Length: 400
Image (cartoon, rainbow, N blue to C red; front, side, top):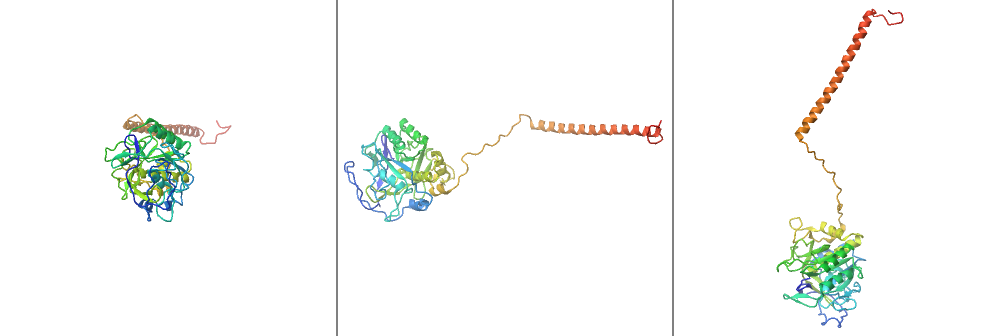
C-alpha cells in the first residue's frame, strides 16, 4: 500500500509470532526462501474484538470469491492451504500467482481467510471464502525507501479487470496505494463496481508526510479504509480525507507469515482486508446486495466516530462485523412527503376575507329565515280574515 514513484505494497514489517509445517516454496520465482517464523499461541486483540468464531454462526463467507491484488499469496501456508484458487501474475508471469516473495499479499489474505487451527488463536474473519491471488507489486517501503518490483498503472488496471472477469471475484481487496490519479485504474474500479463487485482499498500510511490523496481509495465506487490502533484511536500514519469510509484495526495486526507461522504488521494495508472480509460475509448472508448496499450496511452499523458524526479521520466509524450481520436497517429510501401548498396571499387578508364570507353566509341565513316568517304571517292573516267573514263556519259548497 505505501507507495513511492508510481505505487507500492505495504509498510515496514515487524516480524513476531506465526504457524507450523513449512510450505512448498517456488525457487524459480523468489530469490530467497522464507524465514522460519514462530506460531502465535494466543488470540490477537483484533480476533477478540471482531470475534470470527461468534460470527461464524451467521456467515463464514462460504461461496464468495475475494481477489487479493497484491504481491501474490503463499497458497501453501498451513492456514491458507486449500482456500487459494489459481490466480494471475502480472508481475513475473508465473502460472497462477500462488507464490509470494515478500509476504505482503499472504498477510492480507490471512486476515480474510486464515483457517482456524489448534496451534493458534489467530484466524481470518471470513474463513469460508476462496482467495483469488493476483500479483502486481512487490514494492515495499523499508527505512523510508521504496524497494522491489512493481507493475505499471496500466497493468494494475488489467489486474482489476482480470479479477472481475476471469477471476469471477465478488470482492476485490486493494492494499495498494497510488499517489497520482490514473484514468485506466479509475475506469477499472468503476467497471468493477458497476458489475456488482465490492472494491475495498487502503487509504495509505503517509498522514505525517503530507497526507497525499490516495488512489484508488479516492476513486468513485471504492470503499476507503483507514487504520486505528489497539485503543481504537486513529493510527498516526493513517491518511485522512473524505475518501475514508470506515476504519478498522491496523496497528498492530497479526498475520500469516510467508511459509509458516505469524508476524505482526501495521498499516492500512492490513485494515482494508477486515472490511473486505466483512463484505464477503454480508454477500453470503444477504445475497444480491449491491456494493453501495454493502457499504451502507457497514457504515450504518459501525461503532460511531468520536463526536458521533462522520469525519475525515474515521469515516463513519470503526467496523463492527457482528452488528453488520445481525442488525435490521431501516428503509434505504424514504417515502416522499407531500409538499406543503404555499399561498402567495397575505395571511391577515385571508383571515379577514374568511370572516367576511362567514358573516355573509350568516346574513343570508337570517334573511332566508326572516322571509319565511313574513310569508307565514301573510298566509295566516288571509286565513283569519276569511274565517271572520264566514263567522268561523266550515267552508263548503253552500257557503257564500
